[in-house]
Image (cartoon, rainbow, N blue to C red; front, side, top):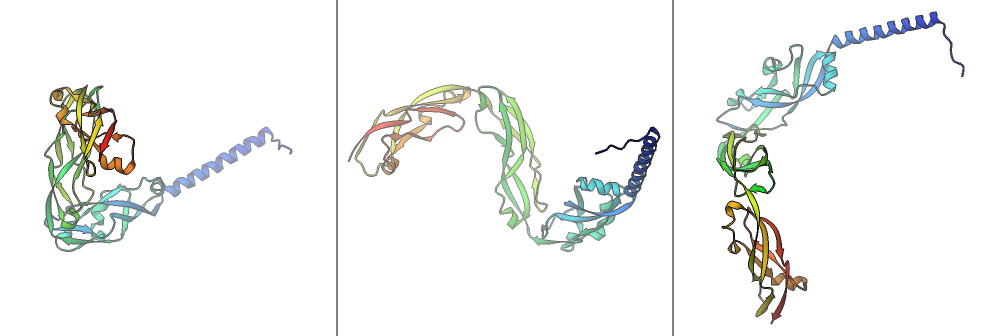
Length: 315
């Protein structure tokens, strides 16, 4: 295929033409992007000025469509998900009625956006709410934690939350679904001694539920752990069909990690080990499997030896 050969003058003219064309396109694009357009943007509602004496429940999702007037630049950024992430809506009118109209609040809502943006309308324009008697309930706090420890250190006893319960208020049917209230994630690393901290209670995802207090104290007992082995006598469980069951051996060695502060408190009496005759009768195992029915919460089990024992059964 022949290649078009251009002279030096022709190449210069072509470059000038291409530059002018590129400049014209750029100028048109800038002018177009500076013009005003109406575009749609989805956003999440955040309720403020909630009624204190009335429990409410929204009858529609907390997601609305905004009709926003802005420049072409803002329309471009909206396609890149730079649209408003949320808007605040006043619920003060719910003290006297069961709905909120966006048209009445557009001036206040527009103040939350950039000065060169303007919300023209909101779909739906009216939000409806269901009301019920506001009740209160006391629920336990659930600690959410991401903890890391120095080698051979760990939690030595139950973590304490102060207070361990919080008060929540809202509609009775909503409160009935809540059995505990989580905290934000408490992140602590390289723990090697008892630590005190404070963590915020997780923000309320339900706009009609209030919680108090907003934070709790945390005491994390941490100690160095060491290995310990005790001999535990086996118990015979669920022996309903036989007169005599003899085990060989009668004791097992339980090895575990225990905090130094609890070393002398944890002994054979703290642990219960046994065999289940019903399990053997059902599965016909050649040996009884050993299981632990009681073990200290804040010890870490390493092994049970032997894990199964021989036996003789007399009917």
